[in-house]
Length: 66
Image 1: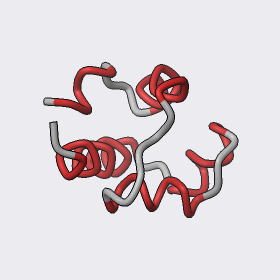
Image 2: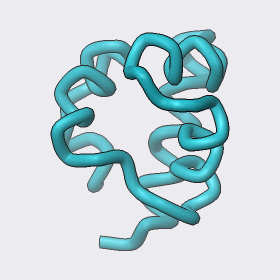
Image 3: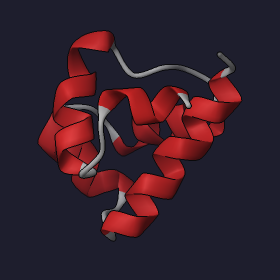
Image 4: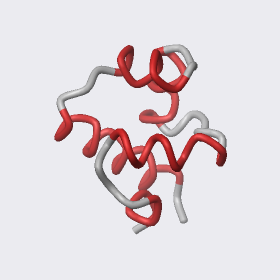
């Protein structure tokens, strides 16, 4: 799996859900900069955040890795 795929999926799902990086960061307790780094493929969200992140974005965790 490529981090590029994860980052593209995250950006796609966030855009579809009409959420900002700030709103996601606020809900997850991370900075908007952290969310930006995830979308740019510079870092990954912690595995413990994935269930809440997928719930927020109305997708399955596995969708990030397809």
